[in-house]
Structure formats: structure tokens, C-alpha cells
Image 1 (cartoon, each protein chain N blue to C red):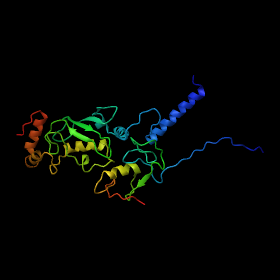
Image 2: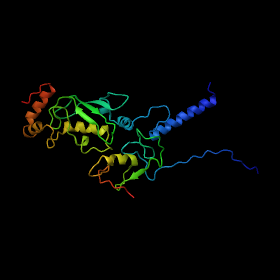
Image 3: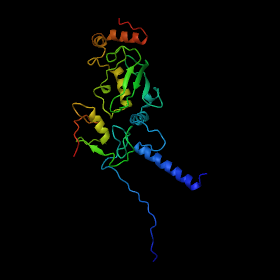
Image 4: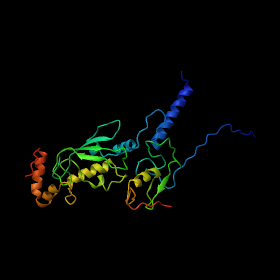
Length: 182
Length: 89
């Protein structure tokens, strides 16, 4: 049986450990040590704007490295149409950016038919001070302001620049599940 | 007058890195703490986890900025402002 003093001492030790962990990110003792990216991802999740966190599903709660974001732009051609993004976080995060794929078929100058996305902060302009919130804001911005001067789908970019009405028509067809380009 | 005899004393000291009271922009752990490392052995804050400054005045944990610079082949830039990274003396 544990005496009162001993119990009190144990409690005190646990409290100190918790306090240390919250400052240093270090957990000593029996707990499994979390990987560096997990601690960072948890902080990113805590800082997410509600409009993203409300539409974010954690695919792997234990590892925190796979998410699904359902993004419905609040303006523009794709207004209110749900687009599903698959986000996987590498072990090297935040040194390396997450990999993002668009699972919803979309007619967009910067998203190709396989769902690859051309967004500067996901590639050449990534820097570790950016977080998931910045990425989601960037993805949303692609729908508000497509960037035909740096295209991934060159054909879509051409139509966007030369025949905006036709572009809107095809984009709308895509949202209805009709993938013809006329 | 009775003399006091000190039998036991528990001393507590406070420290902080000069001039920074913020989190590391890379790992988002406070600069006074340790960056989360998957492989490293138990680390203690302080000299084990030094903080470094760039010429641009941005501060990071040494291990964090080293990892970042290691992935950049040609131009080494500050993760905060993208200016050329030079360690500040």
C-alpha cells in the first residue's frame, strides 16, 4: 500500500513532468515518445481557423500524418462546390511540405486531371514557418484567383485566358459530373 | 541571539535566452525549450539546445535551422523572411 506522503510525492512528480513536457515538448518515463512532426502538426491543428478545422478529417489519429480536407470555396466559379483534398504529412515536416492531392475532378488551370496541384507554397516557396492553416488558405485562394500564367493544365489555362465563358461552362459541367471539354 | 542553522536548502534559478520570448518558427516549441526530436536522446533545455540568430535578427533552435539549411542546396534562406541566411556573430 502506498502511504499518503508517497502518493503525494508521486502526484507532484507527475505534475512536474507534465509541466516540463508542455514547455519542452519532452515526455520522459513510460509514454511513447512522439515524432517531431506529430508535435508540430498538433500545434498546427490547434491554430487552425474554424472554417478549416470544421471540414478537416483526421485519417490516422495515432500518427497525425494523413488528413482529408473538404473545401467549398465561398466565391468564384467553384462557389459552394465541395472539393476533397488528400493531405499527407512527411516525417520531415515542417522542413518538407505536406503532399496535397485534389481527389475531386476539377477543371482548373493549376490542377491537372490526376489531382496534382501547382501552388508555390507546396513546392519552391515552402518554408518551415508556414503551417497547415497557410496551406489551406492557399488552396482556397487558388479557387478565388486561378493563376493561368503558371499553369499545370495548359489547355485549361489557355481556355481560361482566351474564352472565359467557355471555361466557366466546362468548369460547371465538371461540377455536375460531365467531363467533356466543349 | 540564537543562531539559525541551515539544515537544507532548495535553490531555484530562472533563466532565459537573451532577448527572445517566443517560439521557434520551425518547430513551434518555445526557444527556451527543446525542439522535438524523434531520435535524439533525452535533451535538456539550455546549452544542449542552443538558439542561434541570423543577420536578419530571426532566431531558431540550432538543430531546427541546421536541418532546414541542409535541405537547401544553392541559396540558404531564412525560413521567416527568405533573406539570405548568415549566422549573426
